[in-house]
Image 1 (cartoon, helix red, strand yellow):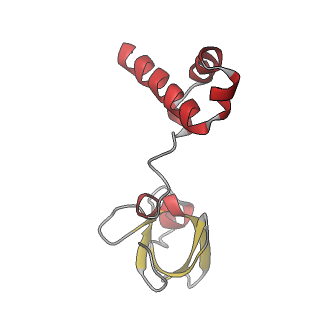
Image 2 (cartoon, helix red, strand yellow; image 1 turned 180 degrees about the horizontal axis):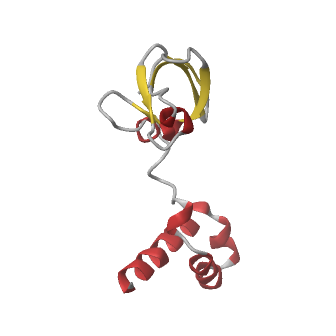
Length: 114
C-alpha cells in the first residue's frame, strides 16, 4: 500500500520521465491520482496511479485495488463490444462485470485466431 512520504518512480511512458524527472516522493494520495513531488524539478505532479512505480518496479494501481481488473482499451475492439452487445441481454449488458468478461473472452478468441 502506498503511503505519504514513500519514494516512487514515474512510469517510463510519462512525459516527465522522458524529460529526466523520474523519481519523487508521494505528497498526497487521491482516489484516482497520486501527487508526487519530483526530485529534479521540485514540481508536484498529479499522476494517475497506473503511472507510478514503487522501488521494486511494481505498479501502485494493482496494490491499491485498481488496475489489472479493467481491460485496456487497445485490447478490446469495437467488434468485440458489438458481439457482446448482441450476445448479452439488456440486463446483463448493464452489469459491468459481465460486460467486461464477455469482451475479454471475445478479445482472447480474436487474438488466438491471429
